[in-house]
Length: 614
Image (cartoon, rainbow, N blue to C red; front, side, top):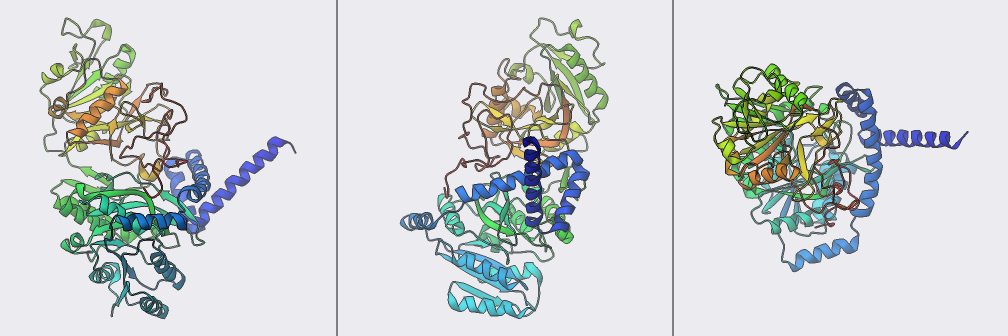
């Protein structure tokens, strides 16, 4: 047998080993098989196989990453403790845990993980929800005798997780509460890092960290390195989740956990706290401070394990939108879109939109673009103009060929003077290489653009071969950026849904983007001949954000682009093989971002772009 055969067998064995590891870590064969089948149905066999292979490789890399960068030794923990002690940081953190029939091994491991904290200023508040397993009370009383910081209450009757959590909350004396599930684990530096961030952000009332999962044999896997706070993502799934830390006064102000929302009580709590405190009170801690155990029957394995949790989640989101006076409809996940979907309703008379097709010299592309807009767009109130090079006349040049009836022509560039003369409420900039393929594309953009506080709204641009070209951008410098998930397959969810979910971004590709005309002019618009320039896209996006607006990427608003795949938002003169130092709120510093990259791939960064325990 030759060397090539040997290497092929080695690769197959490695892939099989990785797949078996993923099966074991995911909570068993049944759960893993279900997840794989759903992926195949949504993305197709070839794409799903590629994704599973990538996940297996990343699982092996994560073990290396944990060993190298996320396993602080005794010396590092002692240095962290001394740092906080010298800074006078002694905020009392109440760790709140509802317990019911927890297996003894997991119960002890949970409590021991709190006892091992490098930060001493904590209390563990445990409510036993009338467990029928006798060992639960025995273990809790044993630990309470051992350490006075452990406080327990034995409920006389079972009230389920919301009532049990409220019973534990009643014990809390700290100014902040950290939520911990009865079978999960805190790493030894968790509360110290939380205390450090509370001290650094005195206005913080809600804090959340990154997290990963823990297999039954203690293997860490499936890390979730989250973006900084995003008001869009939290409405589609519980981005906050673990480790969630709340100002105790705020929790009590909103009434604690709401009965009847079991399975999504944490998500409901976050949304109610947000209504009271506002988005500015939320702080993200970009470190893995929580290990979520994966066992059969846990939502850490799959939401399908607890379908009632989905019902509760939809109710929590719907109630929140109603309380915020937002007119929207919440839809349950579907096989092709496995997330909660929110459809914001447009006004009875949709706002007027002026579609500005930017001509750069490709007449054939221009004709295709305009024809597709006119014949395939179902939005009820729009008009189309072609923006060409400066000219002395105001008529459509004959070189443009035959344009559909009603299409106008604007000879001036996209500067403030030209745009100020328009009367439409919204502007939609469209590159001539774009082709409309889905009739609802403009409806999807306008559902977002017409909401208060929104700056620009961008579509996802797909290549004809079904791969993502661009859409939301991640900054690599003040003047350069790369697309999120460029090259990903059309039905792939991406990193924790980031290829499908509506999300806040620092910058957008203006090849297909909508903005309120007044907001556009207030931000200075594009400079003369700036449209289509990478730095122009980024500069305008950042100016909109500086004015207090949020730029939103809407993957569901999908169009085709016939731009070359090599057309990327990168700085060609940047040094190669160098990690990006700039921090983009939409991209975690534990994820890799190289200066020569063509995409934000969400792969692990070796080393992280943030110091350990920073």
